[in-house]
Image 1: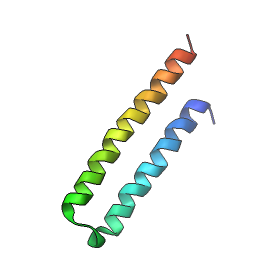
Image 2: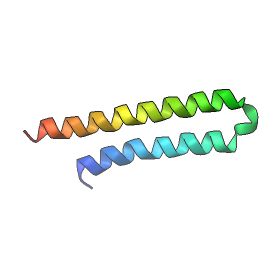
Image 3: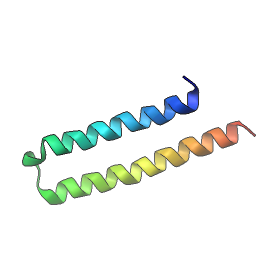
Length: 61
């Protein structure tokens, strides 16, 4: 597997597992806490994918 795909998978697997966790244990948390966590996960996901994209763009210069 090439490095770029590996980095994207390395970001995708935790994101999916976090979302499945909150889906499975939603009875333990208040709705506002779940929404807050999902928003944070989405923001961090965007930052991660932009970082990976920029890293490989700068690496190929």
